[in-house]
Length: 165
Image (cartoon, rainbow, N blue to C red; front, side):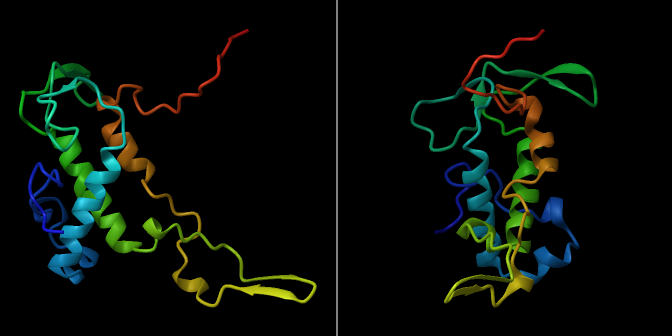
């Protein structure tokens, strides 16, 4: 799939954020583009503040009617209509890098065993060294970066009720 800005990716390229990164530079341009598209898809699964500029746009951003509390400035910062915030652009680049470093993450590969044997049945993980194990699909640093722009501020919201005593 070809990368198209604001159709399937929030960045045309990530060089501005990942300059001189050995993992990013070692990846082919096709792998880089696919990682940016996949990172955008993962980020789009979040519930963002504001509303989409048009009902026909393919991605969650750009958005309108939005200001957020920037934790660095400790001020409410408005988002200009039609723009993708720097925080979302950075998150896209860093998540794309994460996907390049750990390509098996999206395949759901989470084997954490070497050998499991039950009676005559034996399961062996032959390539333990390539297993990402407990590496998260979206690292906490990226969630923290976009948290001010999320409708739930990055909190995990339970569907049940909660009472403080």
